[in-house]
Image: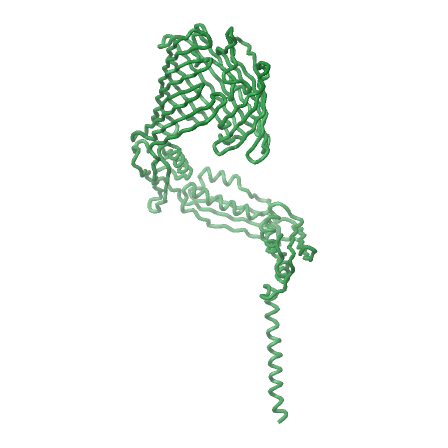
Length: 600
């Protein structure tokens, strides 16, 4: 009875012991691979992570792979989780080093409790770098003969003998795919892409074969709009149906149409047609508002308080003709005028214009000018070329000279060349321009004269915060008659915000017996300015300007110096200057000037 009664109890004990033995193994394995659900707190301190021995992109990649680094500078997690993350750190670091060619690193890891929390420190010796034994990158198919693909293959970021850097390998793949999409190889694919690493020989072999297939062609071009004639719109694309596909041509077409006055939105769809190996081009155009009105009120130290009204008619007919009318009023100079514009043969670069205007200036150089004219303007690379013809009547009086009238037919040209990284906020740029105009009594004019003008302006950034700005103007006039017969609007003057600061508008030049400026035949102006950024979009400037309008061979230069404040506003640089003319009469201290506009 006793034996039989004790047997069930022994069996129960053995069963419990077996359960404990068999459950101990899996729990231990689980603890090694992942933190348990219930853990003890590591405290309220923070985690500091230090990585030594590597820097640059290698260190950045280590920190990105290091799971524990997610808690750097933050409250520490539970201690068991912290130690688990630390235990995985060596594997994380090895994974981070391998893409850069380091397969034999020596890694020392420590985790210590500190007064402020925990410090994890990792000392890394990357070891020797694995190098490329063979680099086999090929372009197959029609793209093999494409000069753009050949240029890409000639400038690969990897080469035989270099350290294996997998990010550069991925960059090669991405560049091939991007170029294929841009150039119209829509069936392109990799036939081989592999990196084979031999750790015994400690070298890598890269095989990358890219079959572009056939290059697609542009299909028919269609425009969806109802304001302009198809004949005009068909002059915008730089490509025609049947030309090889090029996404850059589509971007240029979009920019050219968007830059015209006619459209507010431009959408281009060039979906490939697998059946014909072409990409038809569908252009959807949203017209602008037909008219635009604008008004402004401001102040200029040259002109005083001024107002402006402007109206633009963005298109008049289906041939794309458009016009604008403008009126400006100020105490010194006022004008009203209109301009009728006609697209040229190439509407992107060529434009014809008919102009009419009335100008009234009321100061020591008093004149009324009525002008009718026409021009042809063409953008030729970096050159903007303007050829014009103006028929003008002027009623003028300068100082105490007798009031006179003039009737002139003036042909002229104005060429400007600009090369700048940014026209609005330039760090490096150069502007060069020249103008030539004249009149002859043989061509409906009262006098014979020829006048030329050179302009030069440069901007050079010394560093991220400092710039040098220089400009110069040179003008000369040859006239057969007495100089007094040259109308006031055609004489040279200087002084003011845009020429020699520190002097009032048009206050420098030859004078009469009463000391009033009457204008000169020639002009020479130069300026040098240093600008230094002090905070965000605000800068300080120091400058010196010098110039003269004169009749003889030698100018009597007048010099102004000053300081200014610059603000990079959303609409362009704003300049506030305080300048003093060194050759002004005693008692004249300084002048304030204010201007807005691009650097070039």
